[in-house]
Image (cartoon, rainbow, N blue to C red; front, side, top):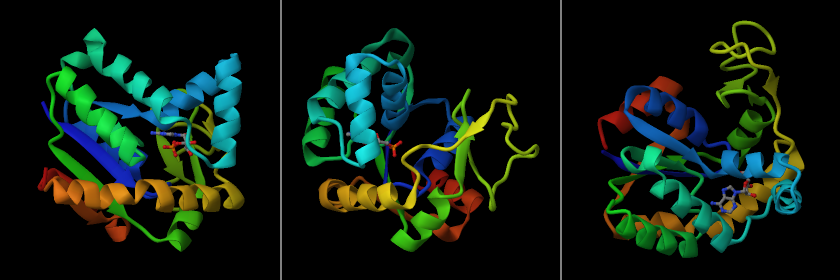
Length: 214
Ligand code: AMP
């Protein structure tokens, strides 16, 4: 039962890698971005606040996301499986919360996979990114297009573009990442948990590199 963390800038390929790895390993993909977009879409008071934060490229408060992860890890369905945390932690405070949550849940972090990429490549990727409205599977309109335009290969769901995948918000998200999330690289390196992989070596190559190093 492996517990993994995926670290990397927005557009580094965390979601794609998580999709591929979860197809091969019996573990639960937990994407905090997806969880938050669901709350945002609910139209509740909290959802509206979250929607505004997401479109500004900032982070939602640590306590809010920490509580969501804690609740999820303790649910019966997830408690029995390994997890792949995609998009969490994103700050040192969240990493410290996670350590406590993991201890309470009787788990430990086995590996932190760090996907390296530069800003120019990120922009090229994100402006061409779409994903399935139903299952969330990501596509790239040029490098990894769906078989039928506008439809998911798996379930035929409509392919949609994220509102925050425009050049201006991507740059803001990247700044947020550099300021708040980058310190986690050293944090986990010091703990001997970090495995670093170049995100641009190719989709299958990244999966294979990770599978043989976790
Ligand atoms: P993502 O899908 O991972 O790119 O996340 C989209 C947006 O959701 C981010 O730009 C943040 O506004 C918010 N978000 C996702 N995960 C977190 C987190 N762990 N902490 C704070 N905000 C988050």
